[in-house]
Length: 210
Image (cartoon, rainbow, N blue to C red; front, side):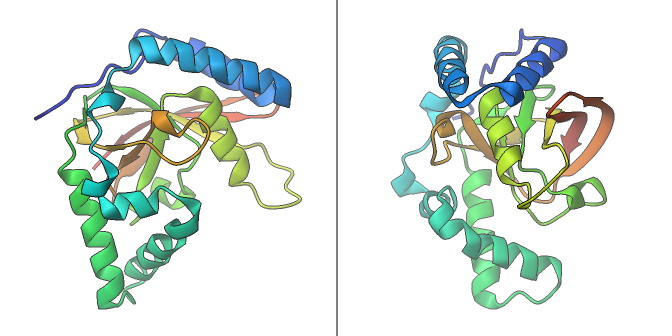
């Protein structure tokens, strides 16, 4: 059954970028309050997470959504991209791709999503990586912060993108705001249309598709 989610589509791009910038500047205590307030808003406006499949039906996603097991799939994706993937690694990627493709959650075209997890390689070509996205601004900011290397001096980067076509997704990453996260298919292309610089954050507007 196809499920068309509603994910805060009435919020404007400018308002969402303001929320991202505020989240980046917030203290730990302020982030706790901000996270709770955003959760409350999303529970009223986002109905897609109720259509997610039980994790027992998606065993590869059940492992990939946790930090403990995700590295196996990431290594398999890197090996596939370099043409050195073993049969076992190919099967990991194929199985997770199949679970996403069969999801009941279909994200509609022009839906706005956020991501702090996009690899820069996606901007150059269709990378092998799967893409984590979210409708939770604080989740996107914290994901972007976690991707920064130790001793960094650059700002974290959050992508604010819209889909150029309907797309299946799996729902719910392990973590504090994970229930608002979505796993999109691999081999997507990101086209940046604008860049906005804030005090502790860079936001890139983009279109994402196959």
